[in-house]
Length: 394
Image 1 (cartoon, one colour):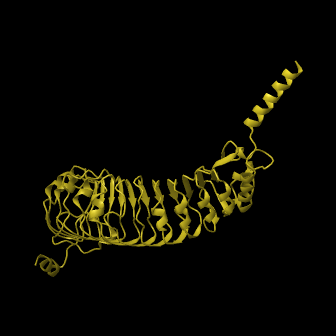
Image 2 (cartoon, rainbow, N blue to C red):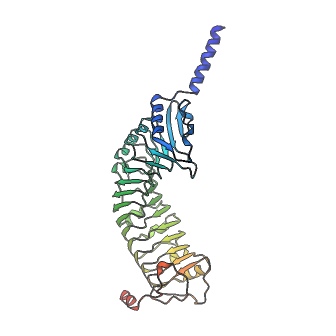
């Protein structure tokens, strides 16, 4: 009977020890180092649960599997939370089983610890909207299982290491709003669906195979990219978001772009040239091709676009009648055609433009038949000087 009672007691104690497994000492010390390097910004109480006399696996943002930390989410994830201040401790690299590491928006400064490159199980790395500076460690290219890399809205400088482009499992790369320079490496991952590089100082051009056709979201705006992209874009028929605005891209815009399954197409403020000929009616709700060097006549296929910006180009000829019909039916919300070389539009001068619609025709090779408010950038001159129109027709 006594042995039987002891056996039951030992079994209970073993079950308790398994239920409350002691954290691996290396992970325990690493969490202590991380805590010492960071503090709550006033108004935040994220670290209030980090009492090292209790089980660290119950700390806010710490997730364990057995005696190892597998996920670390630093900071209160609720929207508007003040975040953390301090620096990221290199001991993060000692959490050998870490698969996910995130930092909420805050005031964390310093560089990205190179030791993160030792986390062979890391799948998700997101350190955004802080004040992280320095370069992106090339050694992050050792994280062969990394799927998401989000370092956006920081103060990172230098180039994007080519090793990042070689990561085979990448699906999301978000590096926007930094101070990155140089060319974009070729990305080899055939599972890459999101590439966001907006608001940097990146340069260079793209070859037809620079980016994989698996991309669904591509934002390259506010950089200094140049060169043609027609062959590149022709391969990107899975895109549901495309923003290449505010660059120096040149050459033709392929007609196939307008059949992509996207709702918003941003190609404005580049140096695109030539005619624009969609193959079918365009079902994209917003198309912005303004401030380029596009020429030829405006395709009637664009009349199904709700917000169309073709201003500040070199379009010629008559505005298709289908635009007038849809405008008067309030199916077009914005139609900006100012600063081109258009010669006419068939609309009754007494026609009433719906209140919900905006039409701007000024500074073309015609007197606008209807007077409508235009944006301030359009200026006050209603018609182009005659000599410009004659020269352009010639």
